[in-house]
Image (cartoon, rainbow, N blue to C red; front, side):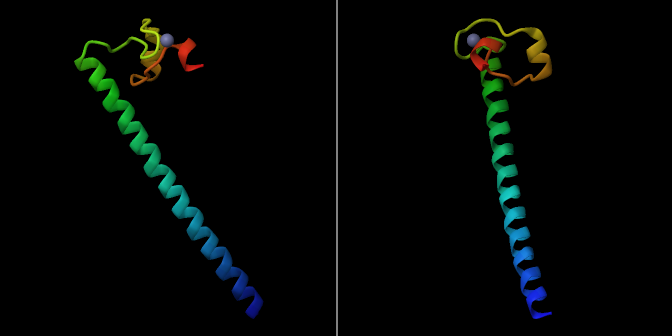
Length: 78
Ligand SMILES: [Zn+2]
């Protein structure tokens, strides 16, 4: 019974650590997404929106429709 309680305690701590790691990953993902959107808005302001940030080619409308904040064309993203 004592052993069971100990292993349960370990599992709970591991769950807590895992949840914390997942929460941190989500915060990072959200920050990255905000950064992406911010960069896209800046490109709109500067008139560069819709053009690849690497090669300057026009990004296919279908790509922009699927992901309006996408920064690069298919070739440069690959
Ligand atoms: Zn490109």
